[in-house]
Length: 139
Image (cartoon, rainbow, N blue to C red):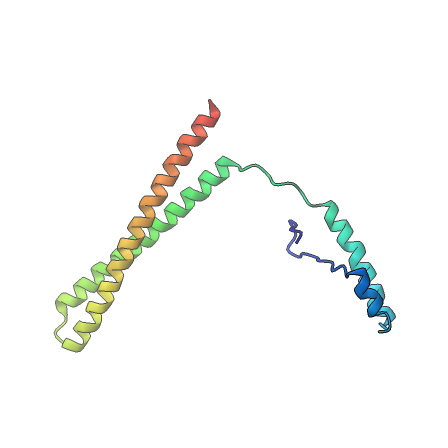
């Protein structure tokens, strides 16, 4: 498979020559033959634009990781606010059925807070390692 920078990838299927002979009795329309030859030609053109793998841009990678950490922090803050609102509702609640539902929501929200905290800690470690690595590259 050939990967290009475009949104569309053209693939060309080459048949085994033995198979072509056995299927030669089947007639195909001229429009299909023309379309096939045009696609085949287009495929060769796109092959010329394929580039080799590019080295990692450490500044872009660092920025991407920073944005990811920032997004996780915002998600964590929002979830913590939700936990506090659930705790407040739970303290004011007097109906057992509603209290049970709020308690279930609170348990789920606290799990999400814990998970986001762990992910954010990992992102901080990754960001630290990336900044140290990029400083070493500058030496």
